[in-house]
Image (tube, rainbow, N blue to C red; front, side, top):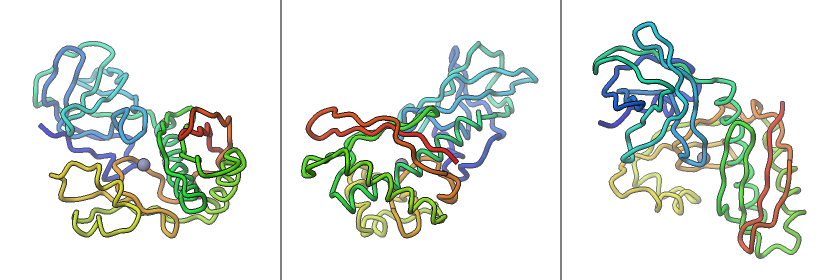
Length: 241
Ligand SMILES: [Zn+2]
């Protein structure tokens, strides 16, 4: 049964109520969840805990199964039957950091594409920081390009741009320039796209949690730049208020 993904409706949901659908050993399935699974959309999994029959059980990881089911991997087995009401709590500090890094990564990838024609070739975000790989094979000095991209991104981020999340029918979404290449990766049976628009900066079909305003991000700080191959110039970064 598909799990309703509450984090897609409200990225700021820190706790929620749900019903237990089934339990298999340490794996718990709920009818809905605010736990973001990982790795999914380039983000690591949320952690946190469930309250089941008055008992607190840590969720060490959430994973996506069969495209639309989220499994909560528990620290210990629980004794509860399907239909039991549970409460879920996510580790907000870790999640909020991932939201800041996620929105920052969209700003950076937009700047690198618009200014240097650089496509993103990989990336990952967890609560300790982000890494993104860019194809900068057409650029003479890739290190300078990445440093400049970060400076440019920080200017845009400090303009307090609104981040909007909404749904569009497939036919309408694929007409938006820039999201077409991503849309092609979507399974053909998806008829509604979740759109994340950083107003004036970036627009993408995207399933993950974001901040509401770029001023929540603070500033991108480069940790390291690394040459990982011809089409992979890697930047490691954090964000700080
Ligand atoms: Zn994204």
